[in-house]
Image (spheres, rainbow over the protein chains, first blue to last red):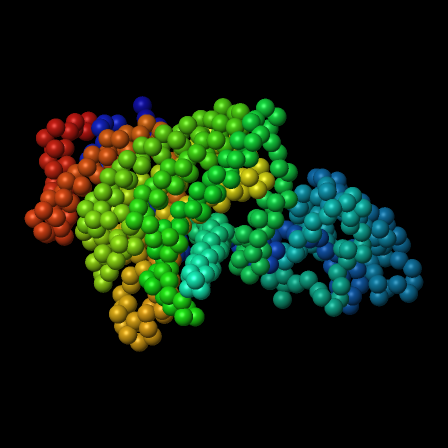
Length: 172
Length: 374
């Protein structure tokens, strides 16, 4: 019994005169290549031209601030627990009086580190976060690194800058 | 005496110009080969070295010169060096008899736009092309490598096989012209009486043989990468390899020029009389030179176009096509042409002969051909 009815019996006989002369097939093939000669190349010159990867692409991590510029992260550790690659580590610290402008909750992450060699960009940290603090931004990728010192990203590289805030479609 | 030195200097300058043009076109053929390949495969091709990658041949040359010049331990050292030299030498010598243009007058000196006008012009081309295979043969043999040797043997037997059909195709041309001189052949085709209209079958045979003689796809068996890892130039590196590859591109351009000379009227172009009347024969001569180079470049494009379209022939198919396909065809062509000249209607005879051939083949196939197992 056949699995599908798409089997095609190939003829294996003598070649016809036109096939033996090669030339009709050659002309046909050359027409095909000429058609492609004038068609648009599909190449994207990568570093200069970048393809839009969609609104839900999981790229560079960002630690969001709220509209007043205070960090949202409260160092609860849920992202680190959710992380299947164990890429996230943090040190919590209690907020001192007078730091209300800097940190939204009474507790904040003094150190927040992501090991980019471990991270698999699954986005589970983003889903686990109860404070909507960590996101994987859709418009930027983690750049190539060439030494191990560059691999661990601290708060200096992760926290959002107020002058260039990260916005997603649908947040507006 | 002064006239002699003037003509000598003018000739020397012209040969230098032809040399430079040939080398320049060969260098840029490598770039256009890659570009055309890319376009036919919906890619962009080399575009990093300079605008649109036009400095790519320079980068390639630097790469070739910088690489280690390796000579295998058990090779025949002098023959190993002689191989690429001979290839390059013969490739450059062929263009000597190609008439690039009509007579021009520059600075009071009148001379032909042709290296040498010998009365055995086309025989010279054939002789040099036959010598060209020695470069491949010597290189392949001196490498002391079985793949190289196989490639060299293939090149030799392929060139011998296809030279026969090529020579027979030329005989039909010679029947028209009555001279072996390339200049006479071109002059016989002036004012649009191009041989292609009288010799379509001959041209078809000639271009197929030209592909085989240049070792281009679909007849690139001497260097086929999949079977012979590069064939005769497996062991070559650095600029010796560069010479082999370069010689191939020079051969392409020169064979394009020879085909234009033999079948497409050489330096003839539509409106040559108008240009001569308006600007004088010197300008017309230089425009004719441009026309010939343009025709040759079109052939170079066809070479590349075919390369990126067709797969390689199998070796027995190659030999079968050469010996039992092209040689009988070229004999038929000679007979038809001779008959046409005898009755004084070569054009009609050429066309009728072509259709008689096709008709005869169809009838033969219907009567005696084995039918497809349906």
